[in-house]
View 1 (cartoon, rainbow, N blue to C red):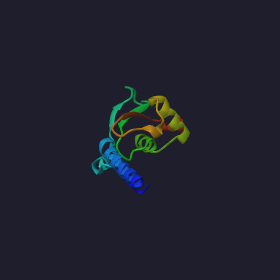
View 2 (view 1 turned 90 degrees about the vertical axis):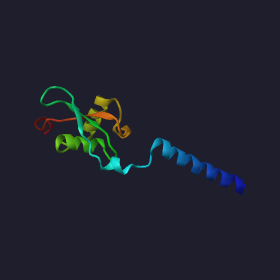
View 3 (view 1 turned 135 degrees about the horizontal axis):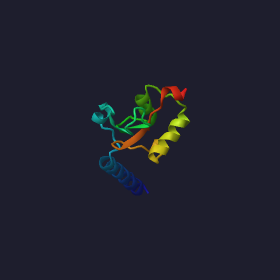
View 4 (view 1 turned 90 degrees about the horizontal axis):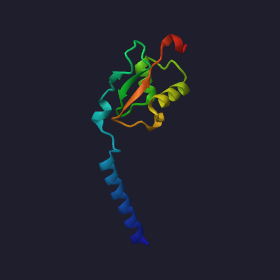
Length: 111
C-alpha cells in the first residue's frame, strides 16, 4: 500500500511539473510588468463602440473597461453583457495573449 501511495504521489508531481512547463500556468514576471495597449479602434467613428486590447497577465475585463473609459460608467452587468455580445465569450474565460473587443461608453448616455 505504501508503494502505491508513493508511486501515485510521484506521478502526480511529475504530471504537475510537465503541465506547468508546457502550458505555462506559472506566471511570467516580464508579462506582468507589461501594460496593455490599444491595438485598434472598432470603427472609424469618433465614439466607437469598442476598442481592441491584447490581454496581458493580470488584466480583467473591468480593468480594461476602466482603462478605455476612465472609469466604469455603467453597471457591471451591462459591461458583462456587452463584452459577451462583442466577443461571444464570457469575461472569466479571457486568455493572455489574445485580443478582445472592450466596450466603450459615451459618458453622457451612460448617466
